[in-house]
Image 1 (cartoon, helix red, strand yellow):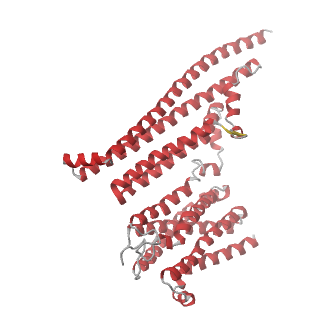
Image 2 (tube, helix red, strand yellow):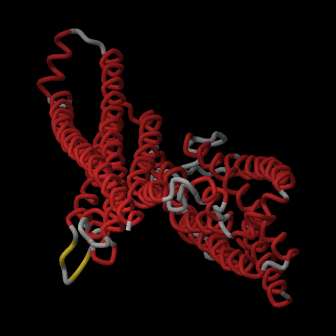
Image 3 (tube, rainbow, N blue to C red):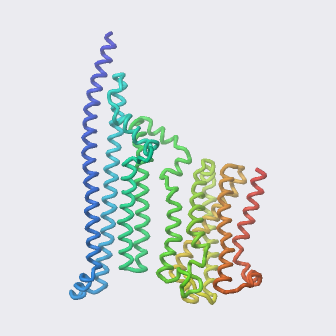
Amino acid sequence: MKEEHKTNEDNKTNIDILLKEYDHRFQEVLLHSKRYHKQSNYIYVFTSIIIAICTLIFSKNTQEAIINFGLDKQTLNAFLIFFLILSISIVYYFYSTIMEALFVIYMNGSRIAFIEESINKMTGKDILVWDSKLIPRFFNPKLMYKKGWVSPNIISGIWAFLFLLLITTALCITSYMILNINALFYIIPVSLLTIYHISQWILLHTVGLQSIKENIYHIDSYVDAKKKLSSRGKMNILHIEYLVPLLTFILGFLVMLLLSMKLKAFWLSSSYNFPLLTLPSIFIGDALLLPIINYRFYKLLNFDSVYNLFKTYSTYFIIFFISSLLISVIINFSTHYLWVKDSYTGFMDTMLGKLSIAGWWHLGFSIFQLTIIFVFISFWYLLSLKGMKAPFIYAFDTWKIVLIFTSLSIIDFLIRNLYVFKNNNLLSALKSEWSAFITLILSMVIFIIGHIKLKNM
């Protein structure tokens, strides 16, 4: 009886302490909820100010006033560039402080849920259930959509993404109107930072939320849990696999699209022989297939067996990467040199014998991409030597996409001869341009070898 009485007294004391902390945590949630809404309102006000200023700057009356004031164009552009950098910095600041407020709300909410469960366990009854049972239930992805009804937090999250995209797009367009081609030095970093902030928003509500719960519910076992992280978890700790295709698209096709349009070398009606739209290997391959190839290669590295293989042979892979980079530089410099030395112009060489800015960008991107392909082949070869069938099959399926990509050289050849050269004698053209199919032939040979290896595994 005495022990039971002592246990009840201890539970009562513990419950009192937990209830006090419960109240503190609840007050923290209220405080940071106010911060969250306050920062959101600041963003809306600031966006309105940006739109007003941009409208004012580009209005005819303002431009006339600037001319009358005697302000030279260079000074005005410097002011506008400062305005653009300051504007996007403030947008990112507000966006990140909103995420920080949400982080603290989720942290306190998880602690409240832990306290509720502790009190319920001590009393033997489900007295407190809001954060421990009801919130997880109604924020379960399975309950986010039902019979046409969509959870408001999903809708608000989508609008948060669109709102950020709208602001950054408006600023990028403004920068292009001011700086023309030099706006790429603003557009590319802003695009990457926007993708990064959106990814952090998504990760906060997935990986971050899960991490908060794990650390609050298992504080004592945090170190052990950290040690037990799988190899795949270590490689994929940032969950950036969905950023790989986006970055490939932006740094590859999107930049070349903008540059070619600036150079007036994009549309088929261009005055150049080979505008970008005459090259399916770029506007189909670089835009659609390369993002998928890079994504699948990244996913291949997240196989436990492949990651362990990488750790074991990391030194060899580093050496091979450097060697692949050097070979890629030689190959791409040679091919681009041959392109500019012919008697035709295009988006890569708007002047005979000289690479355009789009050509230089294509050169750099091609060097990087060919290096990745070489490294991929080395991984694939090692998988066959080690008899790792599952990742080998995944790599083999990826190579099928590479084969489709290299097959676009056939369409390039047809457009080049039938549309540009007006040459219907394709057999004669094939004899003189057979070297254009070297990559296709090599990829077919590698595909056949892979198929044979797969049959023997």
